[in-house]
Structure formats: structure tokens, C-alpha cells
Image (tube, rainbow over all chains, first blue to last red; front, side, top):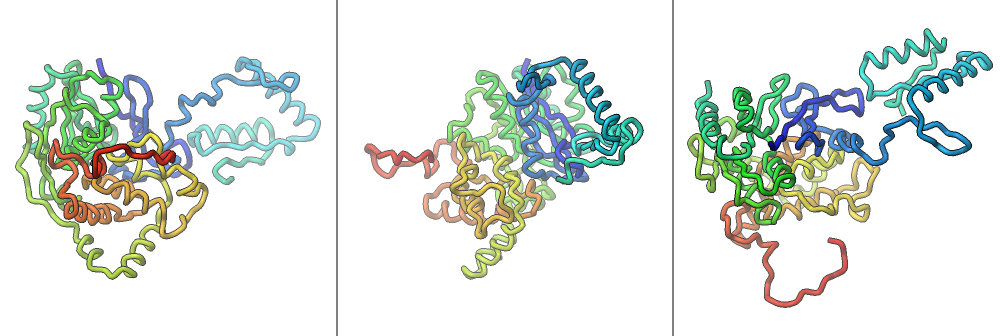
Length: 136
Length: 274
């Protein structure tokens, strides 16, 4: 059976909230179509939105965490990676104080995810050093 | 209830058992419409059949035929979309052997919204609705009457709003080259906004739309800067008709001027990529 459909979603690139359709051909993502009559983007997109599908199956996309061992990045499990991050952040916090850590969040996340990240910065690390990629 | 949508639904229901799918519009979340492939396996989906706003369905047909070259498909298309499909066929972008065209004639409000010069299909054997007369975009006469310096000033002003989203190229059913000049640093510098003006980007697109633009207005509709670029394509189309007696999408077996050669013989390749 041949399947073609468009899945309505929100552009992941910035906080504007443009709507776009992901074109799906036989369960494979093949392109983007703007969403006409959408209250925010009114059928338009910027160049990032038009390419919002490109990274999903990109060969360069990281699908597993990498840990640098002896100067080389090596594949690791999420447990290993998160344990290492927690340990190192803990060390930095103890040795140099919480304000030696900064948390950089992302416009690609949801509001709720960004809330969690600032909560992590303030309540767990103990710093107000919070910023996000859309201010670069 | 719109009579056209009921008539269209009936026609699709009739065709559905004999094809692998019918390309038409479906209403999705939030009432937002998108192209969809209706199939006999999911006849209930036809309850969500939609007509408007129109979508660039010729490209949908191309995407599906690329994945399934032998598929037997039907496509609901308006006049402009039918022209788009015919031009894609002439430029070897798709094979129409197994494709049934279902013509959807535009209503007055739709004709006015697009300033469409030809809001009806001419090739489809199955049609829904009555063909209406076309309109001329009032901006066409206005621009045509301008002096050359006025035209230059008008287009420079319009193009100065461009944010280089490439949406007009992406959505165009007639922009299908594998290598695109607009992505060549020689012509269109990356990372520069506003673009140098007069803009090579828009000049190249105007040239490349010659004898190709079918007047679907998708480029204008997706343009975040509201540039009335279809007006220049229509003015060029007027000249092409005068010079070559060619109207994109109108006659199935008439070769587009850019596929004609002036005389038989060997042509030296320039060695340039395009």
C-alpha cells in the first residue's frame, strides 16, 4: 500500500512558532510544506523552516553519546555519559562554586523543557547563569 | 454544504477501487489543509476531504511517482495545477501513463483571490464544477504601463524585502533542477541580507520561469515578504506567447520553446555545469 501524508508540526528552529507540514512518503520523511492559513506563519517559512526536515536523518547527526577518551571521541551509553556529566559538574561546583557553571538552553525545546533546565540550573547547580541559543 | 465537495467526494469514491490512491486535500489538525493520498484501504478519510486553500499538488504527484513509478494514481487538480502537471510531464519530471486527472474548476471567490487568468482545467476528462472566466491581475497593467526607471524602482523596492527563504523556489512546481543556480555562490552570495539589488536571485528566477510559469501563485502565497513576483512571470508569459505562440500547460503535445533547437546538428557543450 502506498502512503503519503503531511504531518502538521511546529518549526523547531526558533521561538516564533511557525507551523509546517512534514511530508511523509511511505513512513520516510521527504520534505517540508508550509501550512497555509496557520495563524502564526500564514503559509510562509524562513530558510530554516524550509529545511527543518534535513537534520532528522542526516548522516552527521549524533544518535549515540560520545565521550572523549585519550583524545578520541568514542561511542558510549547514555548511562555512562550522564554519569560522567554529573560527576564532572559536581566536581566543578565543589571546587570552583556554582557560578562557575552556565547552562545554555535551546529555542528548539518546548517551554516545559526550558523550564526544567532553568530549574536544574537554579535548584540543582545553584546558579542564575542561564541563557539560550536564540540569543547567539 | 458545498455542492462541489459532495460531487468531488462521489467521483473519488467511484475511482478509488481502481487506483492505488487519489491525491487530494485533507483537513488536518486545527482545520489546516494539506495534500493527502486517499486510498481504498481507508475510505473513511474522505470525510475530511477539503478543497481550499489550494496546495502545490503537482509536487505531491512527483514525490509519489518517484517512490512508485508504476503506481496507478488519480489527482484532483485545478487549472493551474493541471498546467503544472503537464509542464512537468513535458520536462520529463513525471510519467502520466497511469495518472487520471480529475479537474476541479475554481469558484469566483477563488479566481479573485488568485487573480487567475485561466481558472479551469482543459485536459482532465473528469471535471467538477463549471469553468469560469479568468481575470487579469490589476498589478500587471500597472507595471506594464510604467517607464523603465519606474519599473526598476518598483522591483528594487519589492525585492529589498526579500529574506532569501528560497520558499518561492521550493514551492514552485516548475523548479525541479538537481543543480540549482540559486545555490551557486557565483550568482547568489550566501550569508548576505539584504541581497545586492537588483537581485540576481530574482533575476535568475524570472529567466528560469520563462515559458514555464503556469500562474499558480504558490510563490506569492508562500512569500513572507509579500513580493508580487507572479506579476513579472505573467508579463514574461505574455511575451513568450507573442514570440513563440506558447502557453505553458495548454497543449499537451506542443514542445516548450526551451526544448526546441533552431536547427539540426551537433551542439558544442560549453563545459559549464548549467
